[in-house]
Image (tube, rainbow, N blue to C red; front, side, top):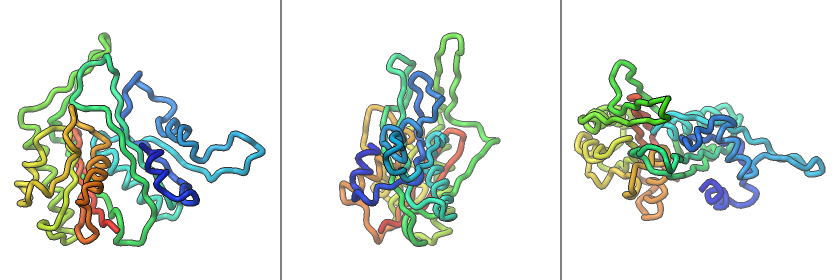
Amino acid sequence: MARQVLHRQPEPDRKVDLLVFAGIYRDDNLIEPATAALVQHGLALGLVHDPDEPPASPTLSFDLLNGSCSVLEAVATVRSFFLTGSARTALIVAADGFPVDGPPTPFTPAAGAFLLVAAEPGIGFGPVHTRYEPKEASPLESYGNIHESTTRILLDVDAADRTAARSTALALAVAEEHQLDLARLTLFLNAPVRGVAHKVARRLGISPHQVREPDPMPGLPHTAAPMLAYSQALTAGRVHSDRPLLFLSAGSGPSESCVLYRPV
């Protein structure tokens, strides 16, 4: 997926200053090295193996994991690099893998990538807003048995309602800050439970058609959901430069991240 995104750029523009892996890779419990380093090696970004070859432009790579909010947290981190001038291009990759013989999960393997380029203020992603409620119980709990190497994911019966309420509150705050017309808004939603999209639309007072999620699949796409939903909307001609886009992700912390994107 990352290679496909890079190949859409002209050859001189394929320099990548920063690579952030924002997915959750659980196959064989891989921890070291960072998955970003493996992706960087696979893409041959900033690598020099032959001393007779001219030095390649360096690429800084690292992992950033925060569940469903990982991609938007990565956007916030990349934006900080852009603002300091220490990077001009960044590749954010998200992919989730799960052992084929492991316990069932509500998520499905999926992958996506964003290639970001520093731009003038008012274009592309704005500041990312994040909320975390440490005193509130999470609607999604995970319990493990270290002796049996198993994990169970338990979902509260009101998980969708609680997630929708918190997500809507953050989306309204961001919309008010940027003085957005909700009637013209397109919302890309990523939630760890099903049934949140219609509840958020109803709370915001907008049409359910304004809330975009990835096309139906056997499970939830998890971290890559914002990338998949945006790519599918772009292909369907549903992204317009005169309509603001709001990316909203809800994690099981519980935490939420939201950011305004103004397409070119």
